[in-house]
Image 1 (cartoon, rainbow, N blue to C red):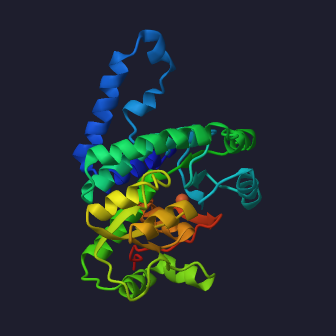
Image 2 (cartoon, rainbow, N blue to C red):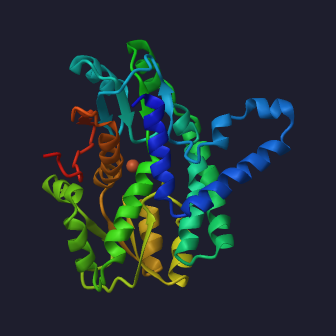
Length: 325
Ligand SMILES: [Fe+2]
């Protein structure tokens, strides 16, 4: 497989696991195309055309130094110049895959946050309320990422001649889908039961060893879960704190997330919503692992030789693929 094939696989898997469904994702893209047509020719020239095809602008290819068959990849949650230098030390790395966005993927992180409106709507929050409250937050995030040194890592990859891409929302969609399937299959009464289920996932088991296993940030082990929402696993970054009250009104009792700020924690407390934090690097690793399992399967050569994956930067590799015997 070449770099573009790997990017295509990431986007395809992200769409298949998306809360909006494939049709919902297509509608999102169609709407962008309609908006694009309304712009003048000079404005169209300034618009990133990838936005019309890729529903996850926070997940891209940043550099192709040599478009070759990919046999050895370095994969990390955060890739910076240090990891690029590490790749040089390791040697023969064909591609570096980051999870968190870099370059223009970071600059356009806010673009994927629209997904959160649909996720909230999926759990019963009226779409007008979700959109109204998220609008403010989305513009805040867009302004927040504007000042970053976006190209730092991309420049390092270009100078040292490394192929570089990332997969953020597609992998977060995969983690959200995995957790949804895991949780929805079971009747979970209390928060302690929910925590125990999460503790059975390999990535979270590993995280417990370093003190960052699943934790209750709001609520009590004996609290009843009520309706559990996986509304804070995917969709770019943290949504609006004002949403908790609306989520409570929509009947959500417990939110499972990757991380939560103090402001959000306070709002959840006053809305009587339990917050269970599964873990950040561990949840990110879960999504990346599901993507890499499929990549490993598809990249396997007839002689049984596959792609070699070297994990780094907070990424813990667990394979759910049965080994070939
Ligand atoms: Fe993350």
